Image (cartoon, rainbow, N blue to C red; front, top):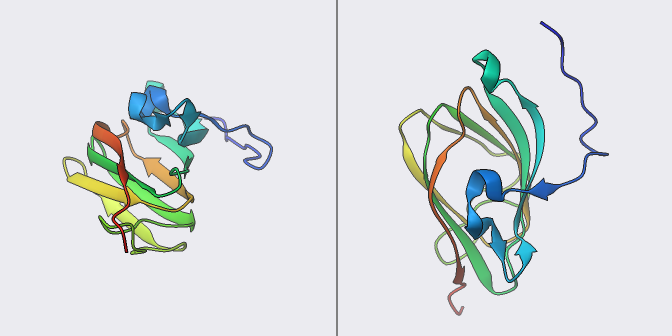
Length: 135
């Protein structure tokens, strides 16, 4: 088996709509983008990517998903929030959604995370952009 080495700094961000669905684009702008670091699903492995969420001003990206394999998430910048958009988890936070686990995320600030699946990526049930509640 060959090692995989990539320079994530020089990779271009690509639209995430193939994985996250049409909700990953809002008003003609890609609000969810990926850098696929490795994809070994064809060999029975998993997929690893950097994901960047860029919610529009005054909005929250709301994701509801089910883990199709163990999902490891490590926050590199920004972080998840509450339904109202208040910060909840910041960079440096690690999470694991085990296979079969329904879960959600609310993202109100630009966020970058390393996401590693040991098989198939999540089944996205919905990805919506909602108004951030008034403070």
